[in-house]
Length: 285
Image 1 (cartoon, rainbow, N blue to C red):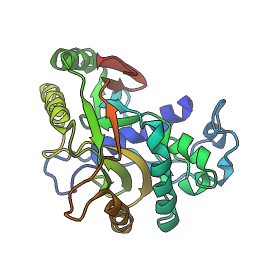
Image 2 (image 1 turned 90 degrees about the vertical axis):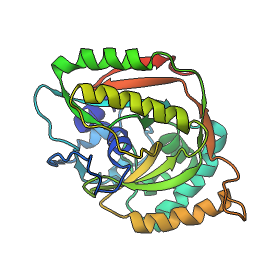
Image 3 (image 1 turned 120 degrees about the vertical axis):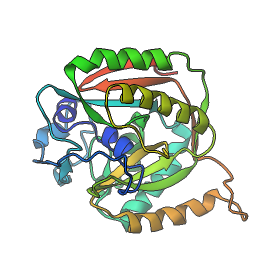
Image 4 (image 1 turned 120 degrees about the horizontal axis):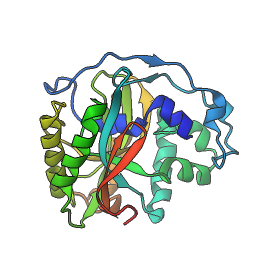
């Protein structure tokens, strides 16, 4: 699987960074898109993976880079790792079953396995679609030059080193589309507890990006994790499914009655190319 990620990049990185605002956002920096060929099928079934899933059914959808590969450039992504609590996975999996039955073409983020393959077995669905580490982006995924790496990491650590522990509530299924309308994402958004702290962290990352002439995050960031994605703009059909699901999370007055799940902020990670740097906090806490 590492070989697959190295070839195709981190799907969640793209999703967390370029799916948060309408295409008309003036701060969006466009990069020429390059269509990637399908990966070798053996990379989709590495050792210790879900070997019993029939990956030959997985006709990997067209993948499009957020920016072209240029020698000497490395993809930069700053994020909070998020793990979904075990006790909430079954309920979320039930909605994924419903979503993929009504909206074909959804793929699991990162491993790109079609959901219609996984829904045949709930245990495999929970393990593959919800059992991984998710990423809540604090900045855009952008290319940087090799000589910028040490400076970026050092400044991020300087500005984010004193981070207190706090809880993060995930309250809402939401649909996002990336800037060039090539991908739609089924995501879970943070609207309440933890939002103030995360917004401050995003501003700190923006400050570092500005000092390195990198594009800032969206003006009105909407922190979220992405669970699944599909090719093209299918936002309208997916939103209808999401709106129906969210009715059971609100009361008569329209206000939220409970979060979908809660996790604790543990650390901030900076991924540059295939190397990760712990910026603050302790992984796994």
